[in-house]
Image (cartoon, rainbow, N blue to C red; front, side):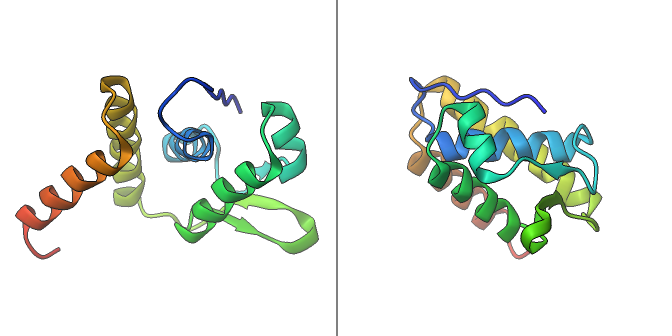
Length: 122
């Protein structure tokens, strides 16, 4: 599992971690059942605050990508949907392109909301 955080990026560090982990899960490089490092260990490895990594893990758990099993650790969650995996990869690509172009996250999200509304009911 290779994650890098660019401190000069306009993308917040937790979002960089979340996006890269999500992309690796979506691509299968982190298969179902893979145990992730503890929040503290990962934070030390990345040179980040533990709260930053914890936020990335929480958001991924809320999205169904990770599951926490108490004291046993955090794992890549089973039962992901292939369509959601493909959409996650597209979202990660979109986020990376928005960051590359210097588009602020709020503006990038507004564009996505507008596109979803234009697409009609889902």
